[in-house]
Image (cartoon, rainbow, N blue to C red; front, top):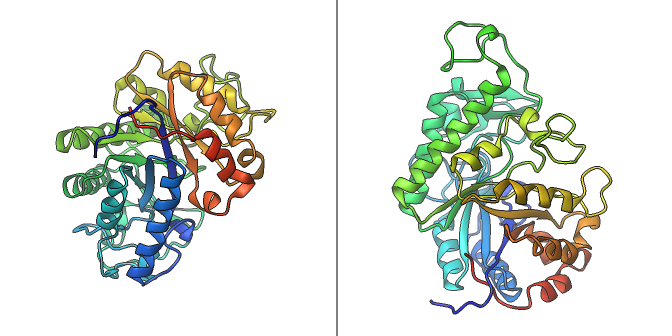
Length: 369
């Protein structure tokens, strides 16, 4: 359906499926899950949102029919069990029926949130079939970002989604290397052959592995369906100015070093269509004020073709109660094309008077550039 637009603004909401945060609340009941999602969409549509970003791969599993990944346990309680319908196709149909867009939210590397026993996974889970792909740390499992077979597997996973479903976008969030993951004596498998750290900087090596994945995913998406948007929602502090003159005037963990995340490279190389930093701090935060980071990211994307959306927290009291103020700040920066709120349950519960703030901030419908 064609809509005449006077206003353009990306208005997204994270819909988390991990831990049953937002949806589905009912397991092993297809009709109840469908009803819940329709209610969710109707609520968002009534508030003039135009994008839902649903977590369709929370833990090396799926909310869609797949030949390479198992069904998610968050649908039925058992990983690998068929839920009796195709949730992604259902969500796409209902979302597009309302003239809204649907972005598939993927956690590429995470296998478990807690627990390291591969035997409890579905028999067709790639982690169980390929234990040499797996990293174990802090009582959880994730895929090894440096492994070329892992990268190929993740590219195939994204290809399967984009080629079989009419998604409007694909988004990865901030989880890359497990934070604090130790540096073993010999980690580099495909960048160097010398078998020791003298030949490579571990940070550069790990970042290059992440960058290679991002570049690969971007190319796969554009070769399959160029209209599908691809982006990342990274930790909001690249580097602090105290460690790099080009960093933000903040005092926080640095994603560049802690997570081996280098969004400036993705932006400069054009391997993302959009970037959505998770600026979850309040405007009066003494170490990391909201507007300081909005300004920094605006400067980063200026002059590029990469769109900037701000991911904002509404699950904390100090940020929920000032959402309207943060949206007003966003609108002062022309590089900011919209925002993404975490997460739906706080809209449903009207945390901090969110609904009343949104009714004012989103009083008019908006289209997406």
